[in-house]
Length: 343
Picture 1 (cartoon, rainbow, N blue to C red):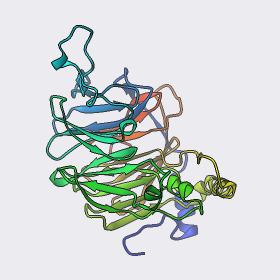
Picture 2 (picture 1 turned 90 degrees about the vertical axis):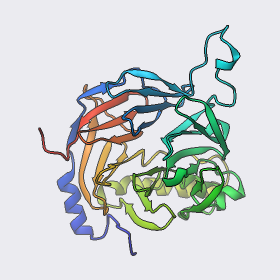
Picture 3 (picture 1 turned 90 degrees about the horizontal axis):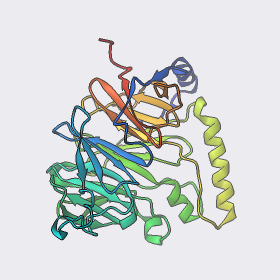
Picture 4 (picture 1 turned 180 degrees about the vertical axis):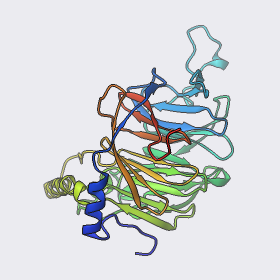
């Protein structure tokens, strides 16, 4: 198991460790970007310090400056009737049902448009400059040299069921490589592929992190840019076992049924990486877990809004002085970094 960390390496030691970390409440300082709420799917920050916020219900990614003032959106919003056709958002550049975004190494904005079965690339002005066909992209992550990695939520065809989990495209939009084998959990091929659906995220070193959405034990794999596995985190500790056992029973039930669209509860709902330390932050429900770069769990928190409501993140942005947690439909909340000394 070289290069892997399993959270259940030593049952007694891990159980005590998990107990010591339980029930640490994390209360938000305030809500930020208050107009963003229902439909949130992604939250990113570019090299200029601008925030890009994506909602599946919006026609584009909203852009904000460091003072949280809205600057516009990409692609630009459709203009009112009577506007000149040259300024109107074209049908090809418009988003059908967005699921994720990132900023490429050459400054383009890439949006995974699940509804259009495509990755769409926009320049800084919001013009569509490239489209790459891809079935139901669920997430996208930028790599060095203009490459992007993506994942698919499709599970119906034999090609999708037998394929790798991560596909990398080069700057020209050509498939460069695939990697990450699925976990075998069910005999039904469509069901097994569905259970392996996940999201991919990259760090500044072009390492990739794949977070499985539905695996019974919350699981994240880390790869280098070229697909070599360097780390695996599997949360098989006692506090996660009841939910994992219930999920496995449901997998068995649906597998034996032999028909019907797979339906499962989300297990791992958000992933974030500190761009400086490469520490990993995971969310399962409203539980937020903090790991160091080697996969050792450092702390466990339960997240709440500033008004005390349970907060289940769908996106985590790690900044030097704060955490931003985005939740659908509650919105985006600012938290003081619990791992940093208080100023």
